[in-house]
Amino acid sequence: MKCELPDDTCRAALKRLRDMGDGRFAWVRLQDPSEGELLQLAEELGLHPLAVEDALHGRQRPKRERFGDVLAVALKPLRYVEEDTAVETGDVMVFVGPRSVLTVSHGPIDPCAEAARRLDADPRMLRLGPWAVLHAVLDVAVDAYGDAARKVRATLDRLEDEVFSTSRVDHTQRIYSLKREVREFRDAVQPLVPVFQGLVGGHGEKDDLPKIAPYIRDVADHLHRTDIEVRTLDELLDTVLGAQQARVGTWQNDDMRRISAWAAIFAIPTMVAGVYGMNFEHMPELGWTYGYPLAVALMALASGALYRAFRRNGWL
Image 1 (cartoon, rainbow, N blue to C red):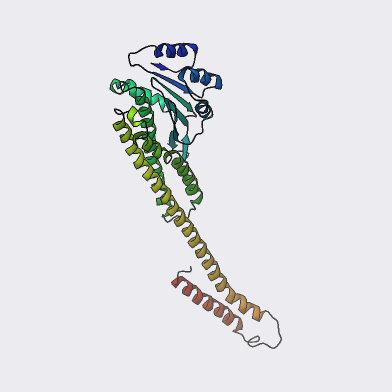
Image 2 (image 1 turned 90 degrees about the vertical axis):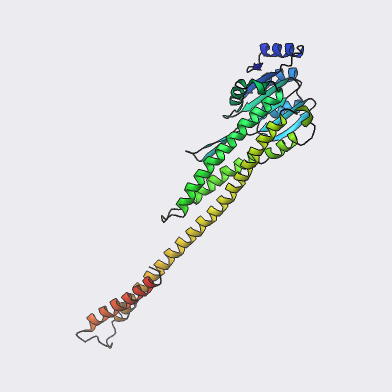
């Protein structure tokens, strides 16, 4: 049974479910609920006040907590928008009880809809009980992590090619922006790894989900690979950022060498013209017919010699 609206009908269905012994369970899905809506269902599902507070406000670090018979799992689903080079995140809390599941979503990303579609298409998984819902939600979120990691890798590859191309374009701001998004990615993925370890690591939940444990372990393997990929992306961004800064420094050094070389070239005619512009009465060659052509030739030859030397040394 699935309830998507926290109304009196849903509460009544939950009450009837408690009196039924046919192994059925209820899945209640809430999207950005109000405090009143959540408190109504919390009473029926026996949720701890601290759990209700976490679910109401969202923005929880991925975690796993026990409140009596109810297991609470918080995660941060996300997607990568290539056009904006941005990672968008949401918040989901899953409360798994003996005969009910409550999922509370905040933000634009809700993996619960896709999880419901997958479970509707696979009755075999539904027969595994409320834990199947937790598995489905985690599976959808981790699949989205993997897809986002592949897209971030593609963006990084393109950015890396541009950094090492012949064009003199400074990509520092783009690299830093992507690095900030990858850090947000890490904040969603990395804390979820110990959550999976707790689910299948023999801390109480393992006895409750012997049939679903292999599926949880499979999702945990996918998460582990994504976690490694995200760490690698973060390290690669550090390397690319360092390479970009080194290239910018090289460009600046090249510019300074060119400026210094041209300054040296123009210093020779400036010096010669300055000497002969002092207007002293008794100076060599002032009354000589070829004095002016000689001075101009001297400036041209000296400047040309310096220009050739700088070109040979790569300064120009």
